[in-house]
Image (cartoon, rainbow over all chains, first blue to last red; front, side, top):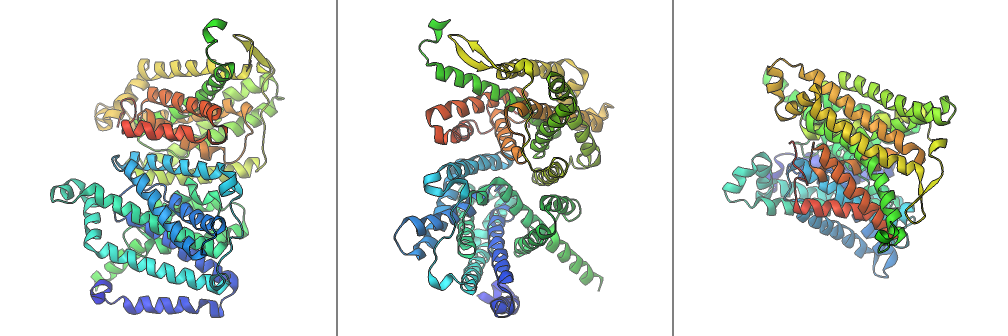
Length: 313
Length: 299
């Protein structure tokens, strides 16, 4: 069964995992941290792409689920006396519930209206988190979230992030290749026809939104593990558009595209911010260039390039 | 007059008036956004940046002319024109090649522009807070019915709102360019087929829309501290107002701004800490019952 799903990609996947597993052995702490951030941001972008690229739903405010996942985890660890591991379940589940609720309210609207209502509801969540000083720490956020010993060290948090990201990516991949994933792509390409052949369009999209919310929340929980902090900017709408840019940069239609896009953006942000205070300017120019010249993303472009070469032979 | 308002507490009444003066700013900015959405079909995220640039330009112009009455009036005229010039350059160099792109791409592209504009503002004006003084004519308070103190500048804003609304109505209904642009909103190819240069019509509408953003920025400048990031919240509010009122409908923008401004100011009265959530709730309620906005959309 696996062989048909991966179609010869399995050796590559294993090789990549082995390389990633070895990172903490020879890399500096900072680079391990950076890799972990890339992995979890990539997971967040991939979960967005699950509804945006494969589902064709205008998910404009995905960062909300990222933020809710992070806050859910952090608050559960700090405010409740229960096992901290429970936080890693509560965060994503809370994100999934928020995804479902927002989905139920927005799902009747089409395209741009959907996206805008979602931004509205997301801003509502943001506003509550921002204002509720006594519970969420307001605009200061929460710092120094205590973690279980095993994942509190640099390499511990890295391995935890790597394993959770790999498992989540695998689950999302299986979902895309499942009948549910096909139905979702069918809805994206032709909703009317899908409805006619008996697909419950609303239900499938709602399910997809909930799943995307859940994995966005997983990414948020991982951020708590890696960075030990949460802050309201994690669910500000500008981050959502940045996530969309990651998907676009890597390519909507390739599964690893968003991961590549996230890697590029996170690396650029880290290094450009080190050189100049004008990171937003650089990001803006990159975005414009991508939209003008690479509408299918970097991987989409390479894909076509490779196919052209193969055709010439 | 006192007897009429005796059943409401003065607090509510003055809060309504404050909400209305906030509404004026929201209306001016979102009517420009709505105009661009309706005619050009561009969800222009950079609109908020132009509002911010308008406020910063107002600061510069006001200080250039000494910060008094003269400074304010010059800012009121020059800053929107400066924003209009900037938007004209942007339209001719970038936007005009993009009218056929899908909305998601346009949204991302204009977001990219807003990032660039934001950093350019940082480059030119720096990251410090700036303040534009309220001109002497509008300083102080006036006494409303029953001795309610009300800032004169807010009263000035309340007067500006209807003036802008009427001017916009005249522009869209009584001028040639307004009529052409309304026709282009419905069927741009047909307008092109009868020999009108649609590209220039679009440019003019775009510039007028951005001019309104700049005007909103100038008018808001004396009431807030002018700073980076003031575009981030405003653009979301403007989009929600436009969506609530009906895409591309200028009167919808007025209605949306009224609902947004009033729920905001009354919300603060009801629940000071979370007053900020009421306008968002209003948008949700409106869209649940009227998924395409309150008034007829041009889309």
